[in-house]
Image 1: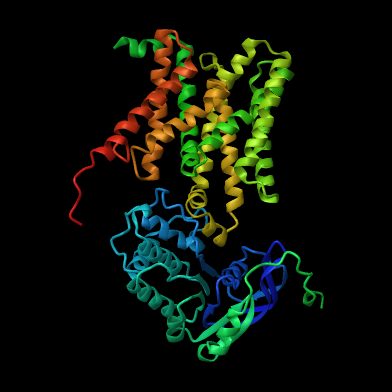
Image 2: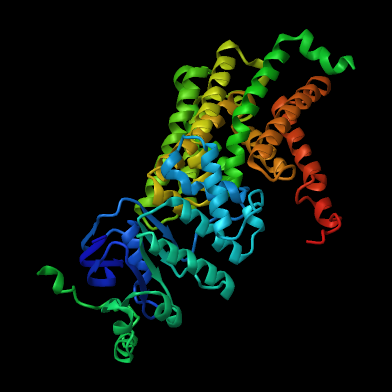
Length: 242
Length: 287
């Protein structure tokens, strides 16, 4: 098992966004997380990376290194950094705060840029990139992070189909290398074609397992029934006390 | 050309003033550059006001003593930085509002303390500095602070750049985000205290921010900007001191005005993103 969630509740201001979630993820699995807006998909990833402490329950992780591509990155693209310097940050686990970049490290950076189709962009400032190129650069950095567990939050949103296709190949390459990958996605076609496992959630788990068995009309209908609004007068959840 | 070098070869106090200004320029400009790149330019101004009560307490206890005023200033500045950070993390108030609140309290306290005992002349010293009267102790302190600043910046350069460019990523790979932010604020405080010995609390932030703002128009890389900022500050110090010598102007404002002049010229004619560069763009390439 790469990841085991026990009765995990995550939320904001006492309101649960992920409610009593039990989940086991096999090492090396490739899982799509789907569900309506407000279903708690991004919140789940924030919980897994440790940005959001659990309100209740526990996360057991056996993977050593974890990499995360947020939906809304906080990258300040006006900051004067070259693509090369930016991507090289993915080598933090090798260099730490103080170590230098050796020539094999720089070769790794060049390799990662080649893998995302950005050879020759080394010296380009990050502020001069298009949206799709930024996403490629983010993937190049993810490649260098060499993580066992990779979390992607809507990685293919707002990029053209060709870029999405090429980045999807990288995701499948990670899967082939035995890494555990979790991706939040909205395009059901992509999920059906490329993701062996799916977690369908609507604040609570609706279904989890092989994609074909999860994405049934009945399950999708149940997921859509979720009410999005937080209820300020809701009573304290009784399930937690058990 | 003798008027260029004469003041510095003839008068020791001018040599000391120049040395002090160069030291401040080398330490304060990289700090100012990172303030600007983090969109915290006005934070420098706020912190400059925040150190006033500390300096005033030092002044009340031991008169115009360098050591006491320095320690007081550093303590007050760090206190405001820490309280600001704590309030921003522990409550709903954001960092800018929290800092504004604390520096205003600090500033009022400082003015109150200075006017309790000091004459107006003393107040002018604190506000406008005494670059022409730097003694050995002050010079050693300035050089010490500059050295410490440059070494610290070299050590924390990578986490600091990452904290500016992609703080979320830094938080996901290491625990440096908090420490590097606080270390950086500490560098701001220490350099402002160094600057206020020579230029006064009001002017110290000028040698930090103006060269950084000018440097933005000269280079697209961090290294180039660091160099341009340091050169700007040193040139401004030199010309400012000369102007104050020949025209009998107060030296602190003269130096900062020179830096301001260089900023205005850069804004108009620098090679990167200046008015001229935007208005008369070079012909575009084919791909």
